Image 1: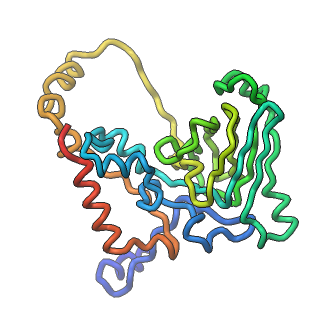
Image 2: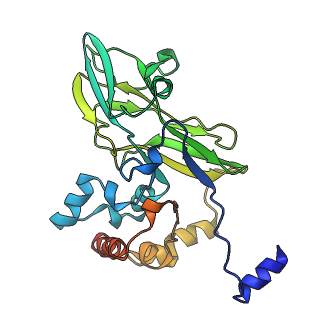
Length: 279
């Protein structure tokens, strides 16, 4: 390995591509052949939510003025709907219908069907309105998630991307995907509704992280901490953190559909410029 590293530095051989930390594998059917349903980087322009597009057009102060929110929106990956998911809920019960899966065989189709989750484990967590069944629905997703040893992932609602979270409550989780690969959409219906989540719409936000011991303390600030808080550069100059000290976080996914075109990169830089004006 040391010899190869030397040859790479000398330009004799090309560097090997980095080994993926996380892999999304289509374990039911093959949803990796569709540009609409493939797992995407959270910052992907094709899943930019309508409210953010409206910000770009309105000239109002946008979300990127807060680097913390902007980083959260862009970090990790988004699992989109693999098919059209129709949800109808009223006093008669909850009905979930999947469409667009006709090409799948019967065995795979059976593995995709929704089922009930034990509601007693989360009773009271979601603000379910009267007249709607208090239940938890579990919808298996076709993606197996595989992480390198020592890594886990937050699997959480795509609150910055999804447009249907006023109708359903998506339950978050933290999964050690170096030991298991199953991924489900687990949710409760909040109110009487009749709507469709179309194939390609963002369902879940996946943020991987390396497991390590984190030690915290809590107490009164020291004089050094007070001085840092009051007098350092980021405290005294407006926008200093975002402009000069903010650290870039990189999440990339490799597949034929994610080779960004120059025009796509230019558009992202243009949008970033619009979204990054001073507070």
